[in-house]
Length: 236
Image 1 (tube, rainbow, N blue to C red):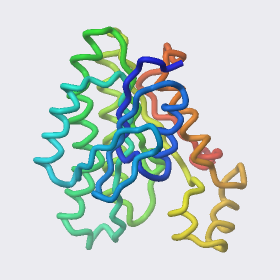
Image 2 (image 1 turned 60 degrees about the vertical axis):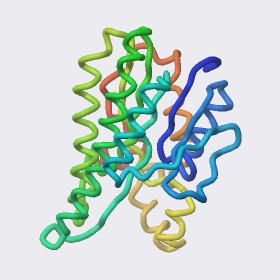
Image 3 (image 1 turned 30 degrees about the horizontal axis):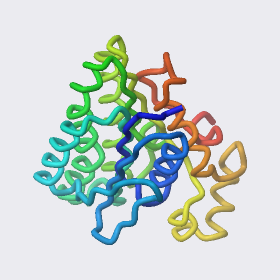
Image 4 (image 1 turned 180 degrees about the vertical axis):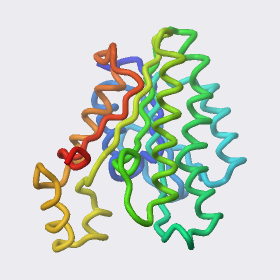
């Protein structure tokens, strides 16, 4: 399905990003992932680029290299969160979240567009969050970034869909990852899933399968959307 396609997945060394990268490889793509730490390990079959998107100069240098390498598929998955009451959220933390969650995808989208539009085909999937569709207390920095990512994606899609480049957001809800289980524990997960209409956590496979489909030639007409994978959570 993706033979001959080149893909970049940011934050592709663990969790949802790692499974997206693995599935892209399974579908035949040549995949590069990014990781923040030198000890990061790429999924089998993937190349690894170590870059810290919190470092503006490093981010822009990586974006320039990405433009030269011209991937056919871009999945902006890397992201960070800072949780704090609105009144006490440090400005530095707010700026940091926007740099990693919005500026990095913006710079990378800009970098890949010339080659994608020139060849008349490209797929961009930006990984948002349910907190980019709804919000809650102490999520000012994160929700700002994810709502912003949605707006950026909509504007981008409006400009380039006619040139064969389809751009979308995917907004995962509560997903069963090692981090989720570590943070919430068994009791916390039980309390959380009681609020999800599907009465369970989502899986990384469910998110990855949809992302890869959006990024594939099978997607011919979905663009500019922010699609939740959340078991119905944001609709009740």
